[in-house]
Length: 199
Image 1 (tube, rainbow, N blue to C red):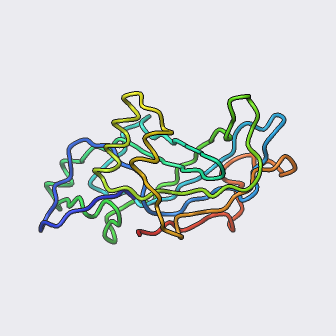
Image 2 (cartoon, rainbow, N blue to C red):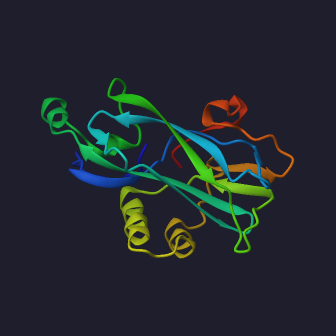
C-alpha cells in the first residue's frame, strides 16, 4: 500500500506518519464526462492494509495535478502504529507495501475527484495520461510537508515525483463532453480497474 525503503534486519514502524498509496488496484473511468453540469468523476483504490497500522479517520486525501495532457493522482493518509500488534507478533515497516499473508485487511476507498479546470473556468477535454506515482515513505512525507506548508502542487509534484517512468502505473483516459457520466465508483467498469504494482 505505502512506499518504503529499508535495508536493516528490521525497520521500525513509526508511531504516527503520513504515507502515499503505492500498490493495489486503481479504478478510473476510461471515458470521463466533462462540460455542462459534470464537475466531478469517481475513482476507487483497493489496497491491503498491514495489520500493524490503522488509518486516522478523516485523514485520507486525494490530490490531482495536471499540466497539458499529463495528470498525477496522489492519494495519502495519516497512519498510526498499533502497539498491541507490534508487541504480540512484531511489525516491520518494510511490510507496509506488501503485507505478509494473513496480516492485512483489504480496504476499498472511494473518492470523488474534481475535473481538471482552466483559469477561465472551462473544463479540460481530450486524452490524458494519468500517473499513479510511486513514492518511498521519505519522498511521500516530503511531498505532504511541502503541500501542507502551502506550496503550489504545480511546483511540488513535478519536483518531488519526477518523470515516473513506470508504464504499469500510467493509465490513459479521455475527458469528453459526449461521455456518459459514471455516477459513483461502484459503477466503474471492471475493464477500467488497473493493478498498480511496485516498480
